[in-house]
Image 1 (spheres, helix red, strand yellow):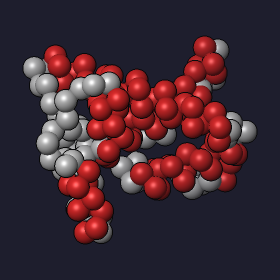
Image 2 (cartoon, helix red, strand yellow):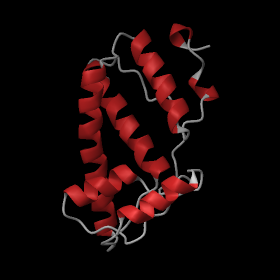
Image 3 (cartoon, one colour):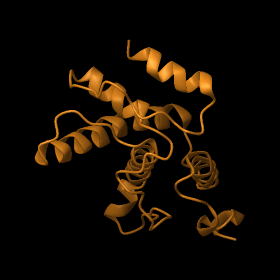
Image 4 (cartoon, helix red, strand yellow):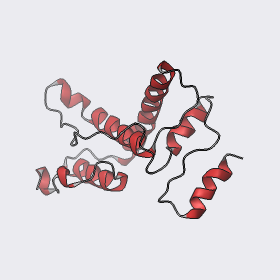
Length: 151
């Protein structure tokens, strides 16, 4: 059991987006820092920051058009939101660390391409791959929808 009587974060798969968000939300509620409106805004800003960073790293490697895995992108967006929430506390040495040490592989496409990153690229007039990697766990109708969105 961790702080606030929550399940220990080591028992949560940090690469399972649903489980990670459930734990993070419960922690933020228990810590008095859960504000849905503000979280939505932080998420939006984190998508911009992580999207820009992923694009910059790809550009440094000479890659013009690319996808980023959903697992990798959403993990880093969530981590960015967490760090932003605790940024003020960090200035006085009282920040709560990100609860996981594990990092997803940047090439992990186990849940397909990040639709969020792809949308960020489109919003920023950047090229996107013609065919995104579909989520293999999605129902066939969702996989077909990803392909249909490209036409």
